[in-house]
Image 1 (cartoon, one colour):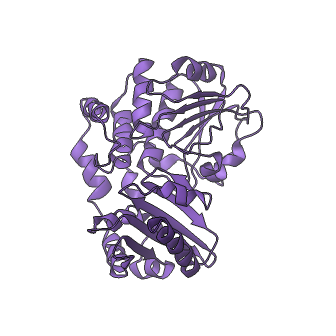
Image 2: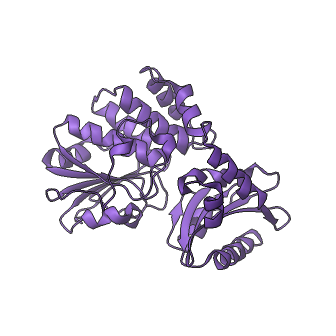
Length: 335
């Protein structure tokens, strides 16, 4: 991966010339976001790919993880292959990596990168490793979807209906339905402009948040039934086991968003959602408020994210992972 003469832009306005120059010289461009794609990752990956194709560029898309069914209405969402499904292609000379604070977050798609690949790194995480040749890091942006709207507007790219749906979904989901503090006046202005293209904002919100399978509701009940509180109710923990998935006949992606339940409770400052992967691996989603930096906690295990929303993976069985993480969070709360 070429990072010689690395350029960092920590700003609201997109570095149009630097990004456009690389795109213009590129022949085959990989467009990828983080593993286990969410709305921002998927929406922006689709939007960037369509933009590049409008310029006549050869685009390679790849994903690592299952795309949640609730995003299947987005044009192209069902056509992104996994690394294993990807057919041999010409050598990738350029990569646009979206919403990945470090290159390992790409997952298996990282194998498509070589030492000669020129990377454009577009992200809004504070803990970004600045691993690209061009790095546009706007920590004040609500989402990469918001950042891409700024770029498209700056280069006079006409956002069509499908791209508007993709960007709106990216912004909607990464702002928690416009609830998070990252939602600014500009965020809402952009959302308004996207709605102005004719997209159905109610349909998007209902499809993403209020169109659950019966299996999802059954799984929700099982997870919430095991809710636990610690440290005088300052910590709320939820747990998902593979047995629960089996009993509910649910897909793992149906647990997307469960961590948000942890902060619905009065007095809670840190929420934890433990997800059993296998006998020796556990994933943890973290949420917080009142000045608790969960990104710093997640980084201890090679994870990361935002100040109040982060995630990581522990190479430990579920129970041991719970013990380890709860111990660390209690230490943080008790100073």
